[in-house]
Length: 199
Image (cartoon, rainbow, N blue to C red; front, side, top):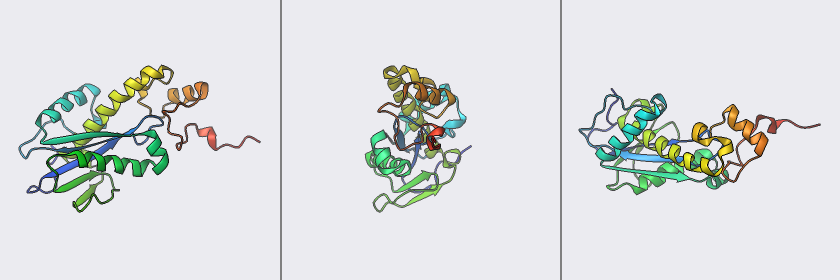
């Protein structure tokens, strides 16, 4: 069973992102404040759960949370400021949407930038340790997956409804065949052979 939060006496949010390693689509961040009496037997890191369980948990989280917010950071912004900064920007934007405002921020991972004067703590693998970070990971993942399914309708040849923009062999084969779209991240190495010189 995951712990509820880091500081039991503070109004604390968990925050996480999804899609950092993708070749296409936005990076999506979420922030969640859970009530002090919240618990759930299989809420954990979204990557360890089936899509069906993630969708069930999404509804539970949105119903039970004191506050939650989800934001997409565009491919253009990712290319301009890099994926790490875009991920942190997304988490900041999600936290900024929370009402009430948290008094403490629990961040998944090991990198973050100050959010005003609100104290925070980075937790490596936090989505497998704390319920509010796990809840944020669920929302970020489910909202991004749904968004990628809508983008799939525009460009079905890349099969984003299945690979969600991640660098699968199928996705890279489609890039070789059809080229990149405006929804691909231009600052990413879309194909391994981009580093090879043709002499």
